[in-house]
Image (cartoon, rainbow, N blue to C red):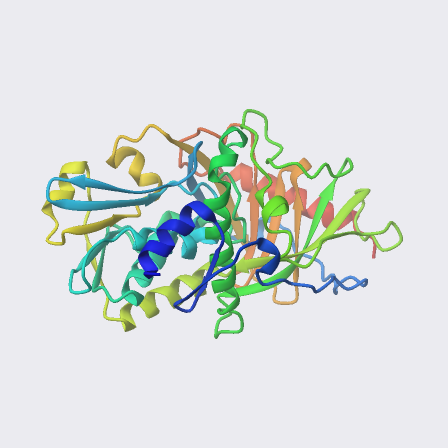
Length: 395
């Protein structure tokens, strides 16, 4: 079967796994690669986190492009140009990047001598450009910003493939396409483990809760729609299982604690890895700002892949994009900290990235909030919440 026709079919069937240029059809998820590992019964070394506001080294705001029906991955003809849209991944851009890149590339119906333009240099834009290069196309990226100044650089950098990707009401028709993208991306990330700079690595996470876990999807923030729990329903075979920490082992003051492994992206190192990969394959990046659909007509390339993320809202007047504001700050790096914490009841999470301990604040009013202003007190409060968690820990 021709690779492109297969990928287009896989977008609807969700039964393919792709890695390193090989495509293998699988009739059921039980035959896809499994991860039979189980978590150790002992806890990792729990080095204390130095959670003090004066250790904050940066604060950023990211606007995630959420679409109720899921990301837009489709072709549109604009004059003599073929425009392929690949945007609207909510909080799952990094996580689904390789799968959505493969789907976008499969929509290119041109010979390999045709130059391809990719608009946008974030997580989805970079991976889409690399995927097109691997398919044999000569690729140029056009963008007004490059890492570390793109919105993707301000993300939390964790494997969250179903984070604000689609509403529960639209989950069923999108499920198979999502599963295909998630599985392909997951397998690709495993090939990046152990590289210089640790662009991708596993860490241990603890989820804290004041009440028993209900295992429903969502972010515990009023005003947001219900989301599907795709990972539990469709990817349960991939990750080592989470386990509830027994009261005798629980180092935290909160009564309900769950330990689980989490795939994490060290975004600074990972972005540089992607840029180097793109340049080594002959790619170039050209500074260009687009303001309307008419600007696509100015490209020399006849095939353009639009990976503008939240920028597509203004560029295309796409009112289906709902902004979801997210603020993070980074504390000075602590290499000895090899675990993270998610405490959604206190709207505070911390992830042990190599470029600094990333503290994420979650606040009511973030959903459908286009403001990209930084609120210093929001991050200071999150760090103080983290300090309280540390102070309450059992030694």
